[in-house]
Image 1: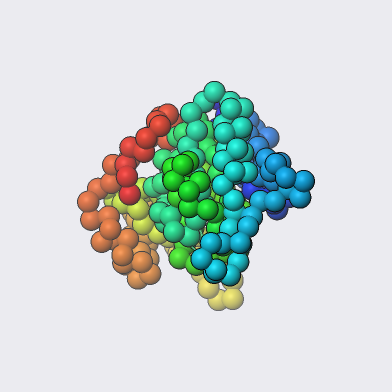
Image 2: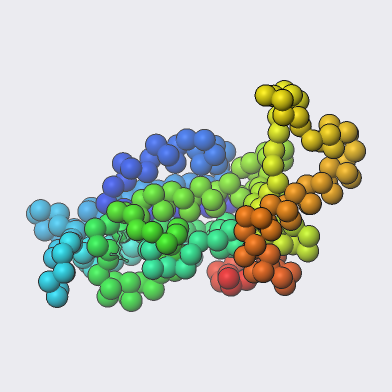
Length: 255
Ligand code: SAH
């Protein structure tokens, strides 16, 4: 069954075109995923359709109010029987990792909440208890782009979305290194073999598959050592692998 992704936002128009394009678009056209955009403003109860208000304590900015968001989550969850994983995009959340992305790709249903302005009233977060996910240590003006980042990362892992040829299994951060380590992928080359005096490494045109495999492993290790030695340390222990086809409500390998 297709993964169902609901996205709650104040700006649904900011999401549609990206979800219809490239791999996310192909994933929904092919039936691996269905996207459902909801405008939180539709659950307001006053005639001005107010979604935000000034913060208590006198700081600047505006805060998203509890009621519209809470009602939106309840109503949207009721649209489908499958258990939902509630996710609030937040710079204060767990930093998104490929490991978490793999976990989310095994779930039947995701509900993403994009905040805006100064963020969301803390009490609705306490009430909804979402998983909070950050796309990095910087602040954006809204959760729409973070939600798109998450959707793109998840749907490309769904079965059948990437062709076998460009499968995600060998990408950076996939557990593709020796002993299932999560390393950077090595370099890529395409035609022509000579360009500006630069040559494609001989091994890649040798036709020796085993030699190519070993070269790729060496490149992964060299690159990771040079650019991201922290990955080698983090992965000193072999990582448990999350099967991409299992359906679980709880993550099987916490980061
Ligand atoms: N005042 C908050 C930031 C609010 S940014 C703070 O300092 O922590 C407004 C909204 O943008 C957030 O509610 C969140 O949904 C989204 N957002 C901003 N940066 C993000 C990030 N790095 N990762 C995920 N979501 C982010």
